[in-house]
Image (cartoon, rainbow, N blue to C red; front, side):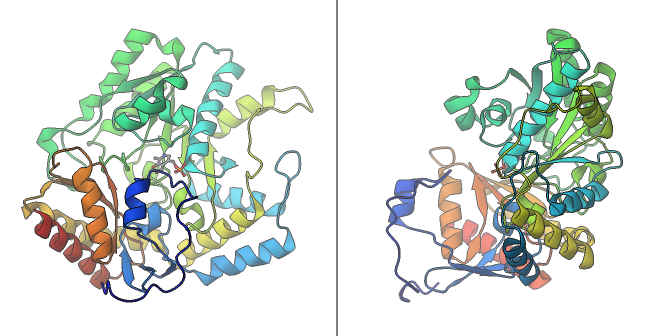
Length: 443
Ligand code: PLP
């Protein structure tokens, strides 16, 4: 990067915006600003090009600056900018719900909208509680989650979370949750794709049933691949076993597909990639290709009908929703994004590009700083040897990478890579080579 180049515009006062999940004081010392985006690149304050190795934040698989989406949002805002989301409808949300229902596993075709992954998770938890209550099993109010899970930042999601800093701060305030073990196992180290060992970890659910009683458990919530905590791919047979146990004990299985939805694993959802159908799927991130905030929850018809058909005529069936649920501009953005995904065959493209991408990632194992690599589809995690304090190495790496022209997310000491599905082979080479150079330099 040309560090001497002038800033491209007047830098605004940085003191008022309290940034989320950011070391704010550190950011003020070395601001990493993104000013423009096109295709697979961001552009910084000095006009420097930064390769986007994380599709924004897993949001933008079709690349940045898609005019089809911008045009759809503009047209929508000038046609119907906002419609109250309670007791009033608008055509776009119904169109979009049908389009999403065509992508989800068969029978999971009832769709509830929100604005963020965190909202989708809260919605899913409430749907699970409402379902059991409607069936006369209101005692089922305990949730089963997993260590090293991330389910967003609202109280339900934080209670589910298996990320220690998030739990320490706010965990106890949410619903009752017990945790299964995470699926990282030493003997799977270095595995790309589904690891061989660990299907039996799903039997933790059976142990928790034995301890707490199935009649008290509402749902088991898992990310099919734990994304934010370093890309933990489920061992072969693990999700199948969870499905079997949930069915046996009348526990709903919720897949949090906020990252894995919309083609990230080369299929519509992880449910299809791994051939395991849950009862509820949460999704967000790529639903609009990142162009508008939006999230959705897909539920089976059985769950929907149990809740909706039980209520007296004219009464609200589910006391939940957001002012901006199914915002017209978000619906328009999502419809345009889904058109792009379909017309450009992007989920197939992700599946085809995956082998090359993962091969290149796997080769990073020879680096001194790298302690493990994992991946599936267009998603990979690279564990870095921690320095004196957990997370410090990851923090330094993401800053150095930015200065070297690559945007990646790090969580703790794991680098997470999630290229856009439109990324060319040469750009994947640049991504991995830049990562290799920076990690070599820092070793
Ligand atoms: N669930 C999962 C699996 C996630 O990865 C995330 C975000 O990374 C969330 C929920 C929360 O989404 P949001 O940040 O949009 O609230």
